[in-house]
Length: 306
Length: 286
Image 1: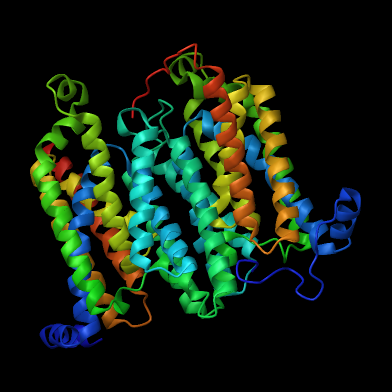
Image 2: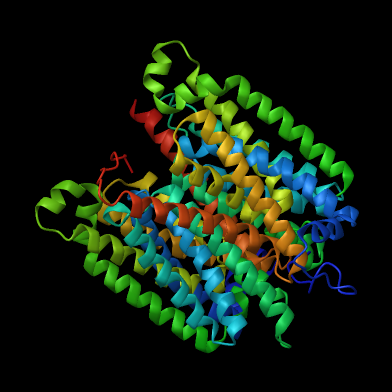
């Protein structure tokens, strides 16, 4: 909704003073901002944890597709009068299962499937979402919110739901983390050691679907990537160690989300712009610093199959 | 409905109106170009890059609108810049998927910024602009836009046909091609620029987001039918053309269907049919 509105409160335009405590207190006077921060926190933690494994497994394209599929889900929910959160989760988890079924045969850890098919599925999902929107004859501001996010209407029920999903998913990642790590890095050896590589792949796709659906509700379907890819990719520049890397990704994700929400509150620009720009800015700065610092030591990157 | 009752009369009716004639002409040209460049994206496993260029089209168009320029300037500038950037970032003209994902997450964020600038600051601003660029409006093309689309796509097809042989060599056996002195990297970047030009033309018609379906669907279908490179390349263009025209006809016959949805539905159906036929054919062979 914010996409087109001049600001959350046109009557009393909030402005930043230099007193940070007063600024934060002023922002938190509004229940909707408190809810937005709670929901944003849950989503940022979930996205960073799941996203770290996604980047490790090189499943960025699948993650993007799962996020996109949330859009027709939410649009269909709006058309049928159901809560959009339900639509997001149903569509994303269903799509995760479909992708797993289509590409699941190869137990070699290659869950990327046929990219062409994924691309086609993505475009078809978007077109279907647009069909639902036009059937619904809904307002276009609503479409913008589904695609690009909005932190205005986050209800307490939504916050509870997002928190529960985040806790369950993070607990699941903590449980399967070690074998998942092994299966992602060296699927052949993992399989030989009796680790259920294919089952872990499907499980991870479901986690990715849940994370994408959760994040969609804050950043919109199109901008999930900002939270799913950028903080983990930035963290991996600092350390490749799993525990430390995941913690760092969570910290970066939280920083970006909180700063984005604050800036969106105090300026007229949309949340999607702030979150993506902050996350991308961090990513570029860290890479640039790394490139300058390591210019002397040329270390060829291992070649990957395209 | 008209089509179902009397196909010929329906087609005549369809071509008798200016907006549908423009849609058929521009849509056909875009389809052939997208089908052919899409074939290369699929065989080179660069689908994600094509996706990023569609997003660049969205951001470029809205930047132009926000700055008060012609949409086409923004479309072409946005997609070609991103194509060159992605070509420069990746090894051998192919960017890593995390790099692509990072770049396009930010591109979309910028697009949202331009959308909000456009809708809030300019008096002519219209919040439908973003939706139109994202989802396309093929029945709303002007004569001028149609001529431009046909000429640009013709150019893309001609250049691609000229480059087809070395590009196929570079795509299927990069190391050998490189050793034989084929400029692999330059060809990779040239392909991205061709995709960029196609994306810029296709975005206002079929939408920046569904462009990906037009790039990958017909190519994946053609690859199921034949594995021979040149045949598959031509077939991909042909399949795309037929599918877009069928989709347009469907949208015209059933007005409640958005045209882009109809086109995507036909592409998905075409791929599904090819897949079923492929499986049946294999069973017969075995």
